[in-house]
Length: 91
Image (tube, rainbow, N blue to C red; front, side, top):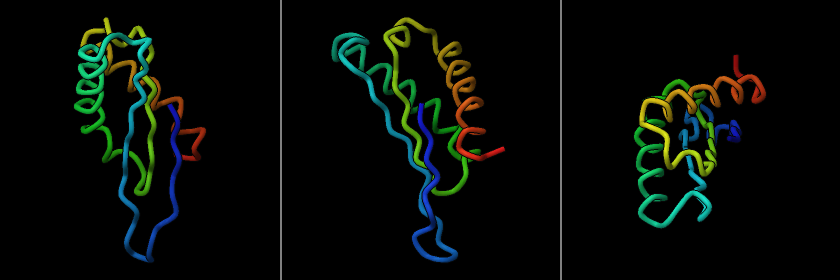
């Protein structure tokens, strides 16, 4: 997972917070990869407001994500966010 905090485009108008997902063929076939992306998209939707304005988040799914339950995948995402936020200068 990588997090970059972009500068504001215009004063008083912060850049939008965005998230992207990388799910390689190592995760599984197209159906499995799409399932992982849909799960991650749903999980990150609730977490985007907690990120600074203008954040650009990239989540790379590992092959284990294909067999994780929804709850475990959410906990894994929370753990990764806790590790990446301090590195980006966010406390």
